[in-house]
Image (tube, rainbow, N blue to C red; front, top):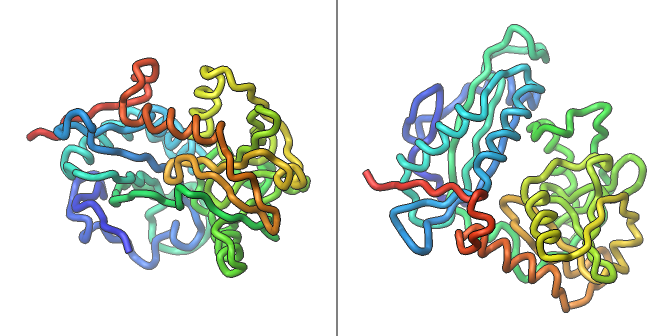
Length: 305
């Protein structure tokens, strides 16, 4: 299903991907005590000897913050150093996705975060479009997003994704592409692995951090881009009914980038999506290093030996 990059970072060294293996008794496998990141990379369209990574520093910072919930001190500088070397060793020649993650690597039982070994690893896959750029259909999930009071939602913790998995499969088996989850207050939270935006009367609206969402890096980028383009933005609670009458709805995430929503339940959304398309074009230009004002978001890595 996936074409994995040939080299992985595992147990503090670079090894062939096929050799990066864990035991079935690994603690994180049983208790979801891991945290991960994800970032896209592409060959530089102007220079094939270089790889462009989007917002590398911010991704490293978020993973380092997530590690704190697992009582693991992993500085962002160490993450960045390993990722840069990972890219150089793999020398990818197509669009790809990097998955850095940390996990409790001790063997045995008992859910805990004290007196336990932790590991940091990285692998990658070739990745084009995660979802159809033409748009996706969504159902409202019967599963609710976790609350920050019972789960550290400011971290990208692996255990949280059981809810995402249940919601995604429920949507797929119901004939939809994707799911939108409500939070415990019945307000829109996020999709199975993406943030949600709506457009009404020329204004971009998205649930705020108080709606139990992940602090998405693509989400943050979109809000910055929209503000720079003079598009009004508003972060607030969003009702389910607003999804059905919105002028535009789109999802955002590292893997998905910006994907328009064509239908929610049995409500079809307008085919004209001017704001979604403007943002998508701008984000593409930024990731390809064609926007001078956003050069600080792009890390250029030489893969020449």
